Image (cartoon, rainbow, N blue to C red; front, side, top):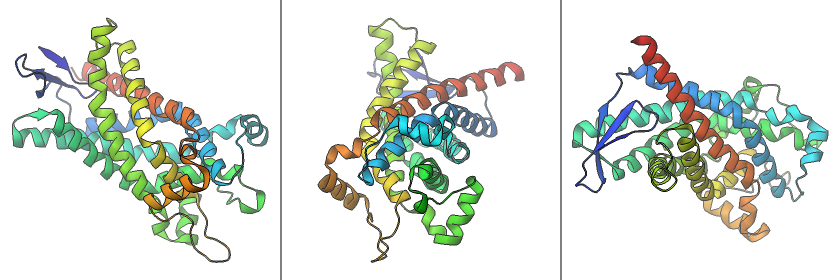
Length: 319
């Protein structure tokens, strides 16, 4: 039996006697590394353009609880306008240039190298590669992640506390000038761990849900309906698993030092998790979950579909 591997121009040939536990990738399309990285990055950027408003809502809802204020969507629209939902989109798209390009490009590169070394690619190997490449991509894109959080939330702050960033380049230069380059990696630990978990949940579960929906719902595998259903389900799983880390990352990236003591309120992942749970309750870590889930599932759906379309179009043109 041959099962198409999602979105990457490979097919996974599985033995019917192996219990589908080990699969061997065989090239279905001879894509060069530059094309693999380019389509991964472009798909990530275009996909992000669809879900950025949901990310803005998730960030603002989560950070509203940090300041002890209730979040009001009508009030946000009244103060910032509908275009306020796109605050920080330049940083978000630029982040995808680094994050999506490196994450999916490196995933395929490392997966293929590991296959050459081991002679097989099993579920465990994909988990390890997905976690490792997710972490590497997160570290590379962390400066843009900090810029996204700050630009997305700046207009909601009191006038005297706003940083009034003009664009992503202004944000980056001011962070370096006012706080030093290391401020870009403030909150990087929860961001990196979250990215590793997303790599595991997204890549490892997506293919399984495709099989389940094909079998139980009679969906044609790799159809738009099949990809959408599987991506939204895997998106729900990793959104539930990573939302607390996303909340920690947002707070650590957006925090300011105490005016009297000069100390930052959030220092490490565990300290942030404990502090938020003790002060506001554990569920405060899930403030903004619905838009966060829309962001996770929506970006997964749009990105996988766009990447596949780009690669199919390239191969059609190349042939």
